[in-house]
Length: 183
Image 1: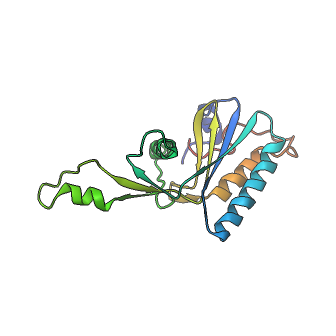
Image 2 (image 1 turned 180 degrees about the horizontal axis):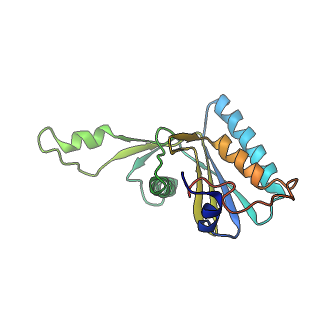
Image 3 (image 1 turned 180 degrees about the vertical axis):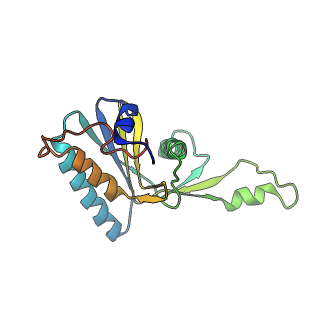
């Protein structure tokens, strides 16, 4: 991005920050250890931070769309679509961390000649872990994603958040935008 930090900070709302870490349910043992390390680091970073709330949640590794009403899949799809819209607006992309695949059912429903798609079924595959940052309810950070040709990992986002909430930096107070990547 070509915007300077002062320009960025003016566009990110002041106010309380909500940091959410979503983890895939039933990951491999290696992925589970990564989730645990990230959760511990995040809890430490947010522990002493002013006006910062930590939330955690889980989602399945894969969700079929359209999701059945009243299931947790509906919330996961809504979150994915919000993240996708925000990252698209910032000029980035969520792929390959989040993936969408047409289902075999939707391909077969199209039929061999007409090309129409009945039901528009697809699968969304979720990453092992995802970090989001909101200021005053507005989505201002998404990790992992690609922005400006750079990979923004969950670890990158956590490092930025740790730096922004570090109480040992009294000479350079955190400003809106220190931890965010969606300017």
